[in-house]
Amino acid sequence: MIRVILHGCNGVMGQVVTAMVAEEKDMEIVAGIDLYDVQKNDYPVFKTPADCSVEGDVIIDFSNAKAVDALLAFVEEKKIPVVLCTTGLSEEQLAALEKTAKEAAVLKSANMSIGVNLLFKILKEASPVLAEAGFDIEILEKHHRRKVDAPSGTAIALADAVNEGCSGAYHYTFDRSERREKRDPKEIGFAAVRGGTIVGEHDVIFAGTDEVVTFSHQASSRAIFARGAVAAARFLAGKPAGRYDMQDVIG
Image 1 (cartoon, rainbow, N blue to C red):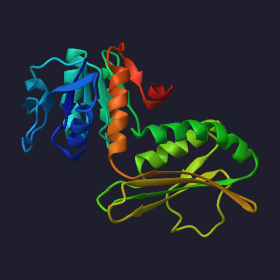
Image 2 (tube, rainbow, N blue to C red):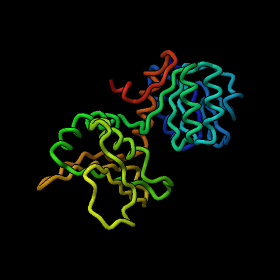
Image 3 (cartoon, helix red, strand yellow):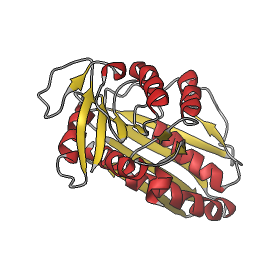
């Protein structure tokens, strides 16, 4: 049985993970960590990682950037693998993540969806063919009204997958409002929509002469991110120290 410690257990995503793990036969949540004890859980909840006295095989984190520093210190000390799903980390926190990965297994991806991570792999293979044929590349992403960053981390990761497939030949354009010139053939343009309750939609558009090829992913609920995190936790439990991502999970 894989013993999971859930960091951010009382948040929206934490409760989705709680319900999902309850359906797994080889996994159980043995403890939660959350500052706000507003939910009734079937496991003990501690306010901080340092307070947690329950042993686990892997940590799943869906918290916020402010809570990540204490979590990484805990992971480094206890040598517990962690699936880090929190977004919006600073450069200093990303550097701390890499340091922690020398002591424990750390899995971090721009997006936890299995479908999105498969799309990364597909784009790396398809983009050089379409780029060589002269297709222009644009990325359109849509999210709910509460999302504060734009473009999304997933949109940038999609562009990175395209650029990796094309040996880094492209640069990114986030705003054309001050420009009065035709697009650079070597740019990837971004457009962001914010509104309503859109969970997440991403289109990678390859626009050529007389034809358009679009790779799309649409998230219908946040459960897809929880499902990816659970799959990642199953993969990461027992792994040696190192840096992992969802590409390792999907193989």
